[in-house]
Length: 288
Image (cartoon, rainbow, N blue to C red; front, side, top):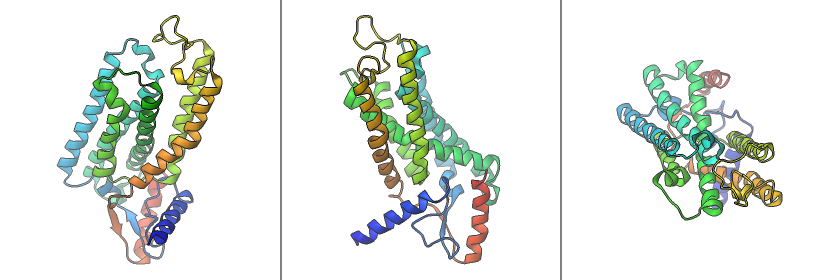
């Protein structure tokens, strides 16, 4: 049994690596064109009862926005707020909740697979992509904060932006919407992380400075003391490479496996003709 599960898991990962980034065919099912199961986009991103899930998504979106507002409002130097990985990650989290709510409302109005073209396809793919970035990003941010940056001071906003947001994302993405993460979507998350590290390096050598660093403190205006490219480039490089090459893949793989725990909302396809018709509709969405 263990061997069968392992083979099935490897097979589904391999399928995802050679499929479109937003593939709606469930890789654990029988192969496409011979009878398969396709993700029900409407039921996934706009589940029923719609009034309950839309209200729940509105609540989560408002909660995330309120946390961001509190973070900026209480920040000593608001102009430097976006320089931190924590806050950039939270921007993606808020963007996901906003798109998740819009997708639920849009699909509740349109309601069928045939209408998932143009604006609808773009909205669904944006929601899916933002979730693939936000969830693993929040987990990595929490790990890095508690291991490398935590200095003993805690506030409500700090707790929510360094771990609490993970539970909000899990509720919306995995429990409410049952969004499956695909292996290729790791590229989205890795790109986000790479761009932040690039920004961190540019900041270190540009002389922009850090208004939150006190004079005399041995951090040389670094955004994070653990990534001080001027005074300790070796340690900064180790943190950066370890995050990109080790931590990020592990976290994303865990998230991808977690996304498959609850049963997906699928369209049951029996005949080859039905698969062809449905797959044509799916492909039309994926080419948007």
